[in-house]
Length: 373
Image (cartoon, rainbow, N blue to C red; front, side, top):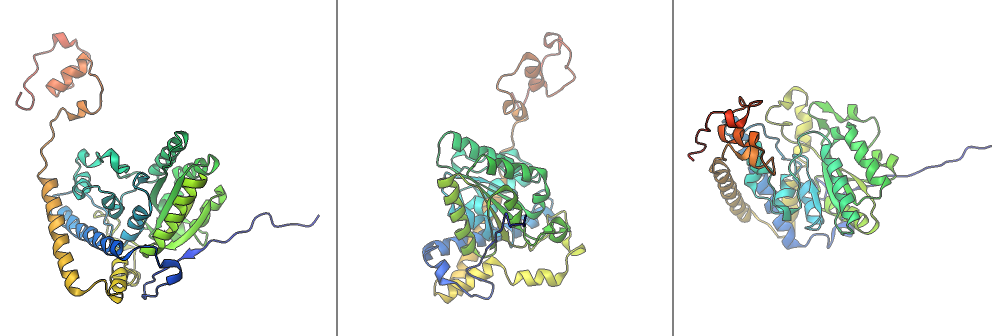
């Protein structure tokens, strides 16, 4: 009996505004109104300045390890712009631009990296989950949120972000499998920046694209220029429509690059060639968008100077709010962990000691004053 082809497909690559300033009007016209384009550029600029300041905060000992977002701002911002305000954004840790667009205050990200848990208390109405440091776990959360929305018959989807290295994690495959088999409204947005810390993408995946990893689960898959804001908006908007109307997940590979180190604890010069970094600097999403707006008469050097001053002021105010936040009481660990405290926990909360464990609370010494009370 002759053989036959049982499966055949292709994966499209979407680019609308490339690094050379070439713009495809057929794909891009009407996608982002001019007034929104200006706001989006201003937003990315502020995020870029926050990166620069956060780096200095870490180096001066005022903040812990920080992962810079520079070079990748268009991916999360384009997605946030394309999603509905009540859709879930489930980030990794390089999605500042998208989170800020949704209304998350800048100082919350700073507080997170300063080790203050209040940076993770994102207002419920923003529909954003906290930053996810373990690689890949957030994709399972996105699948669960989407499953809940489908169960409740809510027209709400989940969009989750992750890097190329995360596609090698078991959590990635479990989330993809659940979402495809259960028809869950999820958008999986892989920010392929070519490096999983120091491990290059060619070692992470031997296939021509990461996008095709979704084919094994029966998903629609697409690749786009992740430094092209227009392209990201277009592919996420279509994926969101599919999720909302058809309850089908989509895998998007946004090709981008992190211009900085993996984090402030890393030195990428040890494993990356400077020529590669310089190549991607020319593909910077901010440079690309600024050039396009100037060509359209939407932007000029005077507006750029004003924007830089505004960004410096906004970031300085965010830093001031983060560093000036009231010191939390030591009892927070109890108050935000337990709904009710038994006598033993009540004693520990009052004494801030665990030496009473195993003893009768009645026999313990009187509790000292706590926080001035």
